[in-house]
Length: 237
Image 1: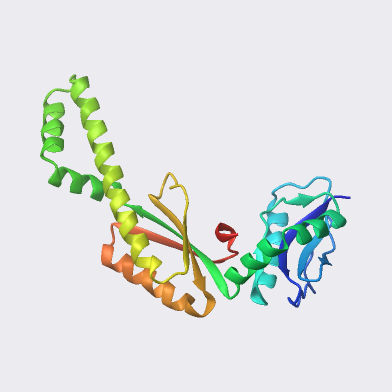
Image 2: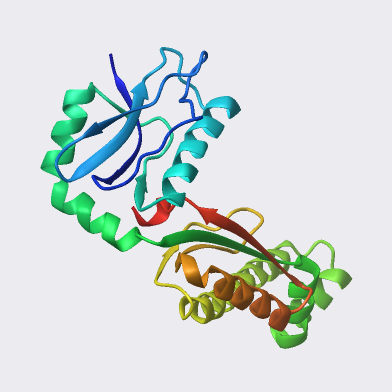
């Protein structure tokens, strides 16, 4: 039967799984497979595995327990191996790589930051700063049929938005990088111009959160900071 994989740990991890159940309906029983140096938390793979809330919560609960008691490499939901023997073989084959990654993540947490800015505020700033935007804006208001100028205005505003969001994103990231060990940038979302994850030492998490708050205060109410964490360090595995 295929083996569902939750996480990889060092062989010395306590791997206390009491009270936890795995994915599936009914929930699968959790078990461990081990080599001399590494371990993995696994279960049988249900035949109808889907990304349902019940199974996502079960997967996340296992990761949270493991992370609370030691370093763990979290696997993304849905990772399946052929069987336990093949999982053990993979642990042996990639021992040096997994061991190095566990060392990097030991005592560390991931925080994800998303930042957006009020569109009205950004457009006001662009209008105030760009003489050409003001000229085209006034011209198109007076000449509603001037399609060429409307297109030029739209392109210019779009360029200005990207440039200003890029600058702001770089400044925010640079400031917070000083409080983190590693940084992993992701694609912006439709609502957020900045989407970035930070790897932070567990005992410095409060300091990092304070730095995020101070950066938010510095930029003011036009910016909205959304900080999620602590999270399994998916972005750094």
